[in-house]
Length: 409
Image 1 (spheres, rainbow, N blue to C red):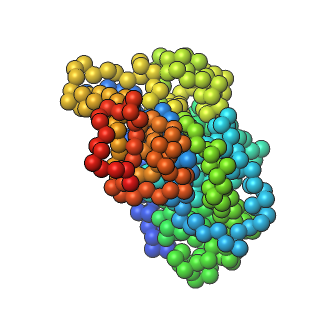
Image 2: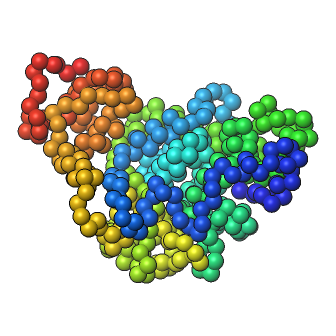
Image 3: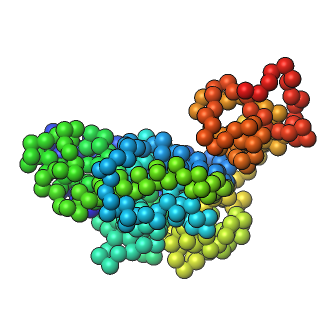
């Protein structure tokens, strides 16, 4: 990430783009997280129902695969970079690695911003998805930002707090920057990742010198671009194809078929001084929180000069003191309670809706995917049909009697 945004203003004006393209999203103040994340502050409104703390690992893979802009893996995939990143799928499959939860967090943020999931592979290339990564040349964090670029994109850096080492701060900034690049370069992820690597001014300059517009350019053959930047596209594409091809391997998919922590930004209460204190209050592993949040490298909670401090932690794990409980029960509270109780008492059957698959349905009813498939005589390759009726509970679990008049599809 080598942007020179100040320099770019004049160039964009010369190209007739202006700075409006840079305003894809309003910049937040401090480190305040977007509204969809928990704020940890009582506002009088009923808090939204918490997300599930885990999800099936296969769901993360499917979200990545379904979000790709280019899922074609033909003969032009780089053999060199395929060998270089050959272990990436196996790292995703390892249950004791923080990679898959982190990867899922980044995929979620990209999908929320309507961006191709090829961009989720940038931290693979930059740091191997290591939040604590540091380069002797100066870049830091899993997105490998230099300080100037980080500050330009509202990453807080002050005193003992380096937001580049916070997956929350750095991912928010990276996704916002990538969204800007994606718009600048006509939605071509290849040009956008080249700009992430070399700086948008250099890509714009190469386009201008060659009389090209972004929508007409062949990124890998764009004259005037450094070889290392053109190789960046080949690296991302090779990684994408390695993961897509791994998805055809039943053994690899079986390794993903496990509960995986769903990560989210959790605000840290002002009176929480150490990660161990937060971990004890939220029921999480302090060691895991430390690995995920190296901005607090010595176990102490460091805070930016302005704004709220966040930890990347399992969803729904905020300490009780972080969120004020509502004083009275509202209709929304009752609805959330009823929804929770409905999960406890599983229905006998489920009617498949559009967009559902065995993994999302199994997660909804807190069932192992293998059990759902076996109960309905399905294999992992089975394609569900809208309106298809699946057996959820056996005779000892059913909350409602089965309807003998309508056999299962």
